[in-house]
Image (cartoon, rainbow, N blue to C red; front, side, top):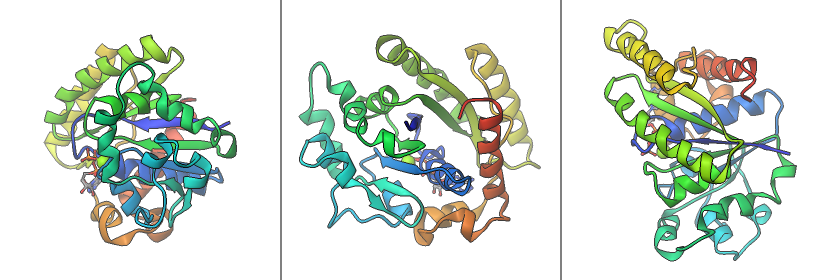
Length: 255
Ligand SMILES: Nc1ncnc2c1ncn2[C@@H]1O[C@H](COP(=O)(O)OP(=O)(O)OP(=O)(O)O)[C@@H](O)[C@H]1O
Ligand SMILES: [Mg+2]
């Protein structure tokens, strides 16, 4: 039965999608069967993996019960994926009322036995889509930028996750915060890490030791490359960091 992991932060541009892509690739290279679910109407994860959303069904079709989840799975250049496109943005308007928070969890039940890990990329909001992602998950991870400002939003994400955990998903594990776009030689990155340490201690959640260094390979992977970055650039600093991050998550017993 797959462990379901979602990356959550209402702030945009903090590395949710890049990390979903990279962590999936790392897990695949460890020999695990991995499925990604793009749960962001921006569809960047789908694009980054070279998935097709014109001819193929998306997670929106699955939520609408037009197709079963397993038939919406595509083999991409990185791992299997159920892609998303802008139609997913209709969900908030089309689905209202009780039970709408569980839609994704219900849809993924039949595919969970086929995989070791399912990773969900979520949009920069704390609305119905992110709530669905958290409720469908066993573990949430909170990426943050190494710039100080992005830490401010973490208290709010954490509060939201806790509220959803208490109401709908008591066994949810908050795997921790990790910092991306880290510049090891810059004072701002170091200060941010120290502040993040205090914040994590205050919230009683882990700050993962591994930070993801800034590297242009990551932006390339998200735009033009559409390839498995562990295959493409195994020695790249950010790729090595993602490998180390996944190792740390195993060592801590979170994965
Ligand atoms: N380690 C890194 N080094 C360099 N660039 C990075 C790194 N991680 C992410 N980026 C770049 O930062 C930008 C934001 O990353 P990403 O799209 O993963 O954030 P996000 O949280 O998913 O944003 P959104 O909330 O809009 O979906 C992207 O252009 C991505 O390529
Ligand atoms: Mg994203």
